[in-house]
Image 1 (cartoon, helix red, strand yellow):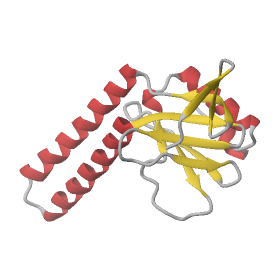
Image 2: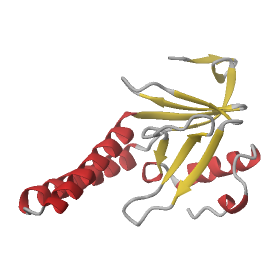
Image 3: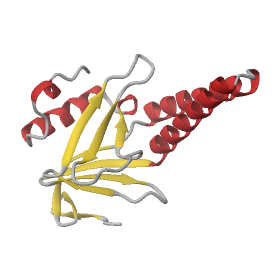
Length: 167
């Protein structure tokens, strides 16, 4: 894992200056984790209360979705943006992800009033399932989201309709 270095009052990762660093707010993280736990409990309720196989399969899929989402929020450490790269850092056993701007595609999903939405980073070069390559916007302040949007527009990562983010 690449460590963050400090020189002359500036932070560096992998020899590049960190221009923007995003971490989850503690209160937002707790609220998002509680929401995911509530989703897991609802899924278990439907799984145990109904005998229909379609309901059982659907509730298992919902439980799996909320568990993966819970882990993604729980293990997320920070999003680091440098001049040429995006770095998603996670705690413990998930490898940190590095993307160069040439290979990254950023999409934003607007959530419901309870979901909060998310910002996903896709690697254009590799076609794979990206479970842990997103950040939940429920855990991040609106000011931080505006800074991220401005930064991605300046780097010409966002184009077209993607400029129309709703915060």
